[in-house]
Length: 560
Image (cartoon, rainbow, N blue to C red; front, side, top):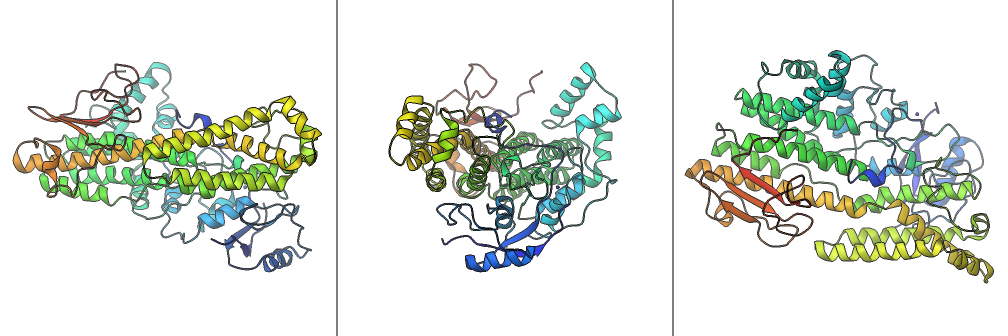
């Protein structure tokens, strides 16, 4: 792959939980954002033409690059801001928006269900410009979350609010009647229009969610401060879809119930293809919400073999999940290089992240280090690390991949330990040409801070992949049972009539454990720990269990 070059397409006026805990310093999900200046598209043009275009657009001499431009250093060679630094915010969005249109982008319709202020404050104009859709009116029939409805419209608080939340949670996992929980039925009625939009949105093949930052006119890119203002709304949407699905299931409207469940499955997959680890994790979580509700659908006596087979086919056609390796290769790399660039701007004096990384980047002789460090070496080292991390995450064999990642992580940890060693740093500073050596140390130290939870994200993605495979297998089992009046003696009896091939356990590479019972079955994957916990999972005894089971008939819900 050659250098990525960005040209100016048109100018715009300036006016804009468990696995994710380690990422909180990196992504701010907030209520407002600040605009960027120009929408860019990647064009295969020489650097000299790029500079000429930027200069012509501003009617000023083009800025001199602050760092050597190239794939091995800055990764992209433009656009440059007024200080000569890469505008990574524009560069990343230009790449992410390739082949995206208002017609194929699910998010262009989802935002119409959420409204112009999904987190309380209005989105900036630039958000809508990137989506290429009109700015939404302030007033409209937009999605109202269950908690917001309970607090603002029902006036609930304390124990009554907890009871409402528990009832809503149960209503996503088992059939329920409107007469038994009238407030939930009223909440769903209030959301009819946004839910209709969501069903149409999830039928679209692409997902692009701009990540705009708080920068003011004239300020540089700061992707680490990028906002994801619709992430929580997507979780609220998943809860609304599954709650309505269970209501419809109770009413015997299986086709309508499945339409809601399928939309939720597709929503999770689409979101997992967003630019960030956060979106990937939330996408996996939404997939789990859909899986739990789908088990109640499977357990409904009105399900037929034909319907079960059709549902299986639908699940096989949902969008592919996001690839963690690709997220690292592009988005995480650009965020990391942007963070490095901002450190380069600020030098030893100011914290470019308003306290977010300053404590983590405490090291001896900071001022002197920043005076002599070779920033080109820093960027080359970080770029090479991102290349290697993407390669590690691309390894198909899970055990081989895990060992390769452990080695990668151990190397970074060892370097970070060196970087805070005062004697080590003093020795380098006192030596000849300390810049390159400090550059390598600093790059790996920063890399360790910017990728703290990759293994956790990978494990979450693996769990999501396995539970999705389990659900597809459960629909094949349902079709078999409806046809024959019994469940098969062994899973291999399902292939090839009911499913093309029975999947193995992703975590062991061996067949799933399958235990038929008199009226149903239990089957499970060993989960992340790779041990047989006899079908027990998170929150069950013994503690530490993490099997991924499906049981039929469904056991009663546990009381909180």
